[in-house]
Image (cartoon, rainbow, N blue to C red; front, side, top):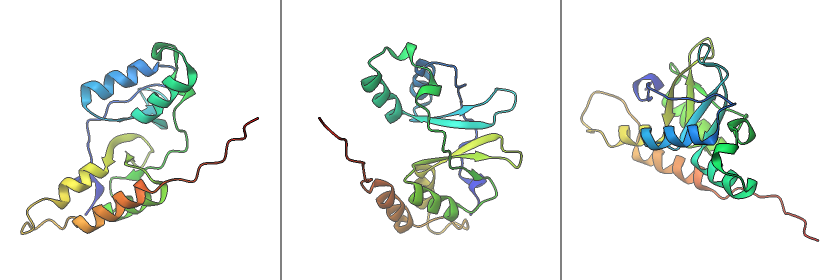
Length: 160
């Protein structure tokens, strides 16, 4: 199954100079926990991503109001992505390896055209098993969720 069959196409994004308030507004209005950060609205080249978790941690560690924290200060710039013609199973493998719940979907020019989430894949796994679409199995979803949820090794913090 191709990613284009499952991805969310109507994706809101932010610019790096915008504040976290803008990303939070999108998350609230779109009921999501992930916003791609793009270079410009014209090009839509993804240069980072921000999650609801990133914002919570920044709010705590930076000790500043959200309207004073630019997305460029907290966005992840090591972006993993996929293409709409990729196989869903390949995207799931990328999610497992990098412990990600969502991947930006890019066109051949590297422009943002959608997002594939683990939730999108899980919804497909629950479709009518008699349908002609070759989807993904609940077992694959479970394996991906398990891999994503593994505790990461955290570097020890020196205390004095």
